[in-house]
Length: 192
Ligand SMILES: [Zn+2]
Image 1 (cartoon, helix red, strand yellow):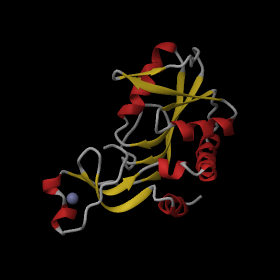
Image 2 (cartoon, helix red, strand yellow):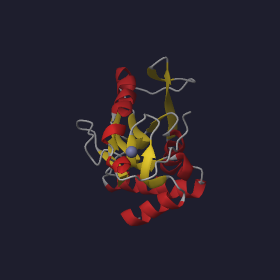
Image 3 (cartoon, protein in one colour):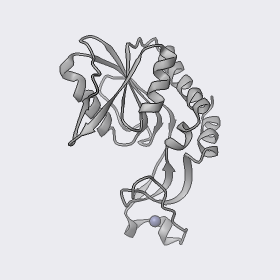
């Protein structure tokens, strides 16, 4: 799938909006992305997961386990796991700490693919990586549907792929150029 084709797919499901948005953080932005709105369509999710798997296979990365941070990465991670025919598990944040729960376990030397819906700062991805480091499992790649950092986030020697790289601009209210020219602001999102 070409970049424009992907962008259309995201836009049609309203997962990707361009305009003037108030984010749950309070910041204003020119782009709003909500992966759940595309991942609610199982067939579209499969198409996206196929694209991620294609990228992994292109560079001959072998994967034993898919690991995603809950909630955002779970659905796409599960689908990637299905296509690769490997286990798909997820980490959760409890009392501020990211951990494997529910009896999920990784073994020393297992090759782990981290699958996310969106990467913005990379902080949550690093937390997932740190949470499994003591086990001795090896993170072989990090993939995401969307990269909101426009390629700026990196994880040392771990390869990273995303389907769509977005140049997202975030502004504090007082400095927002979209406010200044009087564009109506929209407040989407799941957080109240
Ligand atoms: Zn604004």
